Amino acid sequence: MLAASPIFLVADGMGGHAAGEVAAGIAVAELGKLAGTTDLGPDQLLDAIDAANRAILDWSASRPDTAGMGTTLSGVALGRVGGSPHWFVFNVGDSRVYRFDGAALTQVTTDHSEMEELIRAGAITAEQARHHPRRNVVTRSLGTDPAPIADIWVLPAEPGDTFLICSDGLTLEVDDVDMSAVLRAAREPADAAAALVARAIAAGARDNVSAVVVSLPRVAEQTTADVATAPRHRLPDADS
Ligand code: CA
Image 1 (tube, rainbow, N blue to C red):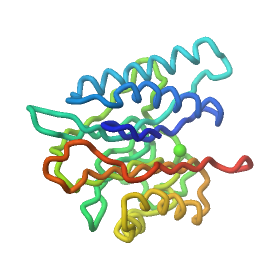
Image 2 (cartoon, rainbow, N blue to C red):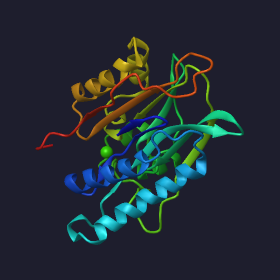
Image 3 (cartoon, rainbow, N blue to C red):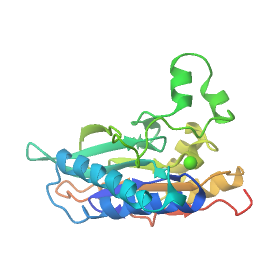
């Protein structure tokens, strides 16, 4: 995870626990180079995602035991388009970005996963996907050649905008209605990420659970996102 204005993200590693953590860490380090950037543009963001992909490939090329390691990458960055503040919501893989309007959550990103394809084809329901044996299979990830195409959405930034970024360890355990309820109940965005992770653990989380909540202060002239929370992260138990 990374929460370093203007960039906020979750990277959920894959390819064996240790190698996955390395891949996620490389992605965080590469994207972290954007921390403190003013007037970030979408091309700069996409270049950083490409650099992260290359860095993961370079690492695993010299270490056969980490072959195939990769990571998801989902997040938001606050930048500028045409002189005005905009969010860049980005995604590779099956971690997610939701927008929260104070009442309900709307998923902004589209999962790159077998489950998403099966749901779109009408072969299974979203509820069946939660318990499907192949629920962890992603169709795009960082650490691949050719490089994955990152989805990017450009949204005008308004005071009060709130986003939830999370790994599938959260969304497999807690549905959108319950996640909305947690966000509404949290007095501060500060509390929301911790409460969401706690909810996933209580539900018996079988996977990494990562959540970052980003909120743009309700002050008109404020242009820098402020994460009022330390991002929350929980690794799976050693025997899970
Ligand atoms: Ca996962």
